[in-house]
Length: 293
Image 1 (cartoon, helix red, strand yellow):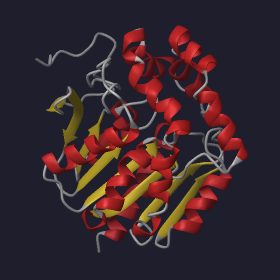
Image 2 (cartoon, rainbow, N blue to C red):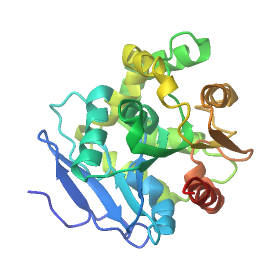
Image 3 (cartoon, rainbow, N blue to C red):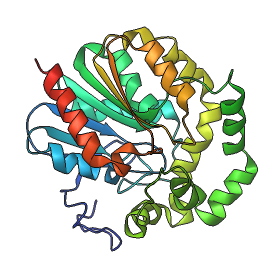
Image 4 (cartoon, helix red, strand yellow):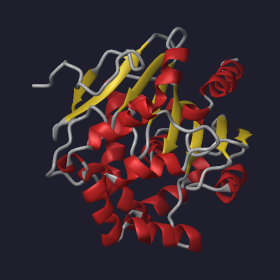
């Protein structure tokens, strides 16, 4: 039985959306489903959850149907300790939610690990994806690029696992480090730390963190099918000060996508939709209107 009560750490004044749950067989996925109209499907990365899109949901819900999931092991979703958390399995949950809700002609809005986990759907069902909005994300394996490969090895190392186990390291320290010029308010930062405060709740996101290295074959299989994304109207909104994804990653997207508009924010880091939400909403709104014609 899923409780409808909010956890004590959740400030409903900044996340005032109704909680919905979907049975995945292995456990329950939390998601929000706000507004009506053409569906916008928001897919988060590590170590965030649907809270990361709260400003966009509030802005677009009066005109669009906004669906934002929490991957299993994240946010308000269940956090089973006996499940694989392999990226291909998590990607099937994205498909499960889209199909289960009967969503058609969707717009995918993705960030960080949300890129591979949802673009795999776009590759498989490109005719059901009307538009894509990308924030600092990727779709290719770490192998072949020295900087990325070394970072992936570090994230998969016993040392990083120890930091996660003892300190909840990614939520506590990674998020502030990859922000741009504007620091994240303490009260907001706590909403990323609190869902993972208990050690038993960190298995999912630790597995996904280390999968940057171990999921190379799966990522490569997606990258080899990137032509299925190339002509889908895409808006890329990119924080240039991001320490996780660099200008080289942005260039790769620009060289891959044919029907793309790129907006780069010079003073913004890893989270454009958190750091400059007003500008993001303005630019994304114009893109949605333009591509609706």
